[in-house]
Amino acid sequence: MDPELERLFQTVSGYFALLAEPTRLKILNALCEGERSVSDIVAHTGATQTNVSRHLNLMFAHGVLNRRRDGAMTLYSIADQNVVELCRTACVRIASMADEKAIPSKAVRRFMPQG
Image (cartoon, rainbow, N blue to C red; front, side, top):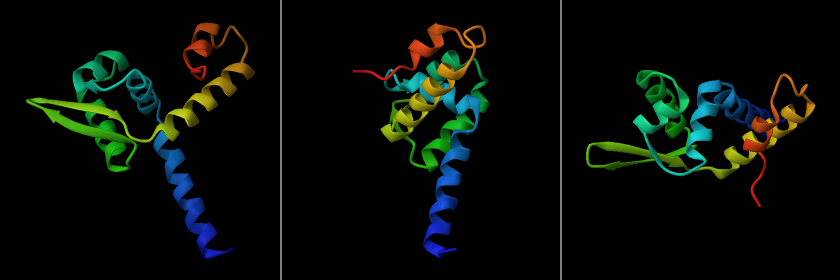
């Protein structure tokens, strides 16, 4: 196989692996509404602060999120809107294929593309 294509596949695989964690998807969902503090994200996801912080740091390190300090608070926002669109597309597609009892229509509407 072409080495450049092999590197591309490795990179894409890593990108999908980053999104293959439900807590990270919950974090992205919370941040779709705009910049949030860590405590806001914790409240939105229902995960522990330690767990959320670990995922935030990983997503920041991979360029998916922005991070800024405001006094003692750390605020996060989405740096790569393509990640949001990718997740939204996957959620809508999977929800449309699922039995309505498995995924309520409310969940489908939550991820419908804006516009």
